Length: 419
Ligand code: EPZ
Image (cartoon, rainbow, N blue to C red; front, top):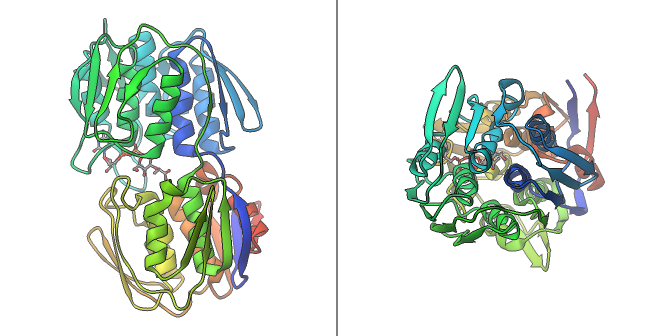
């Protein structure tokens, strides 16, 4: 298992091109199952999660061709069973349930395991499928859905932690080929949901309201092939902006959609950093001593849970007391114990982290645990005294395209060692 060594102390400067969004590419690749015609998707990021999704599509019978970031999928014939050994690697595999139900009127997918950010239920996905007329059975670790036919329905997908992103995606993909009209109330508003709806509409679906709490799907009889460009990855962009805040003298992220990053740039401005957004670029620059902050993670357009760990790393060395409350995944604090090994002073109170900023962290061997926590540890190492050794970096490779190489381009002293 590779390790990443971060030699703290270098300043970051310059610009970096942001990749296509992982969390948009995964459901859009799953959506190609809804037609037998070829679909060409551009800007698919080169990540282990997207590789896993392509493996699943291949296993389901689709032809998959990939030339750098361009993927063509032809799901002429598909079978509807996605077994454990492919699904267990990635929770987002549940995203094939909706298109398989829509296309084949049945699907069997191994239940996703939990993961370190907490239990990852799919009860809201299943509630949506049942509302469309599917029968749902959970047996020996698999979830089976089947329906003689799918009929439009009014469905509220909001759970106790708010909307569900993949649940909204899944129900939308099952509804596009249902008979009649489906109304999804309490829908997730994330840009990735909008990107999926845009792609489905290019395939001939009739979806309105994506990006609002209420999505309306007019069922059609079939979908055709389409070509699509994935939106930029707002979480990768946010991660690099926080890297620039921690150790930068001026870091620019290019090929981004600034309006997708408002909550993140507002937080960095709240810390006192200078933010300049121009066309498809955003620059973060130091602007005096950073200020402590209170952050609460919320569904989009609120502050994203996927940026919570990265902000913990920044606020660990921001003088004063900062408070972060995690409302989406209350257990999503695996990074805190590791940051404390580097000298951070964090007090946990339930789903709230109270951070007393310290002068400087010290490098230490730390353990990556989930995708964003691992990125946060690399960011913390950028300004720490000495070397931070991050192990289990396969977590990082799941969701960041060459994070270490991109940080090196900005001036970080960072190396990947084969362990
Ligand atoms: C998506 O996960 C993202 N993953 C996550 O990003 C992101 O953290 C999350 O949305 C929230 O924004 C992808 O898009 C592939 P949810 P998803 O369903 O859809 C609860 C990353 O780092 N819930 O929106 O699985 C759930 O437990 C990953 O890129 C139910 O209770 O998340 C959570 O508390 C991590 N029942 C809340 O809702 C359900 O049926 C939001 O989860 C579904 C979810």
